[in-house]
Image (cartoon, rainbow, N blue to C red; front, side, top):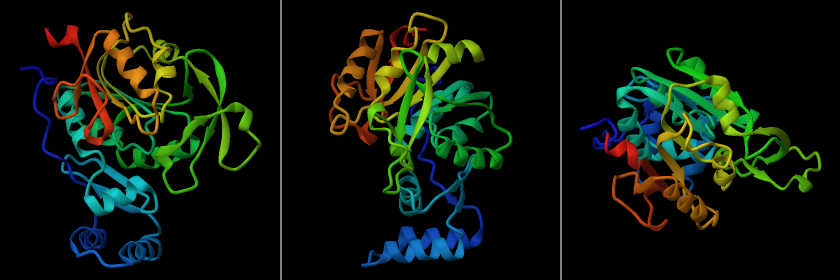
Length: 291
């Protein structure tokens, strides 16, 4: 049985790296709910921990999370964010290979996968805000081999306008209409290039797994990649949140037309974007399945 076909690894929970953080996280996760519990947590995190919590998993990956951010809060209270998707990604990358993280944010996927033996990473994000946090986490994990690329990805060279949400969800940074750029603090312009050009520059030896979460711009990214060329991914984990991004349906059908079978991250074959655990789809190359 290949590494790709193995069942996902047990869910990896993030634990506090020091005793005070362990106590705070235990209080978040195990004390009964009461009105104002979230506000108490935010006050403690801001005033006693400087607004940053240090966590690690059993594999030794380390993260510095922001408790005011959506993903950071979820990890603090639930122990993990997208644990099923990360478990699937860990199973795929268990034997090593190249992991391509598009929309890497602060490193939620790159850090735990990058510490696995034999894994090399390429992390891409158009947001300098996200990459600043990514770099902080990379310093905590010096053993990770990763190429960090600060660019937007699209089907042709272009100048794209990004918008950073103001509601505490850094992962919601997205491409918006260029015409709306008015020099506001929440907007910035980024040079966009085709993914194929990036990979030609880095020349990876095949892509074992491509994870992508770019808030509805997935099709533009995929149109900049030659799926018949040397950088065709063996596996993809793709956000298909159709309620917010109806274009996810076109992306789903596009990847099927390129010779991928669609499954939930739990490994169940699917025919459409419905009832998806963690709103992610695992696409596996049909040609790779029969190797």
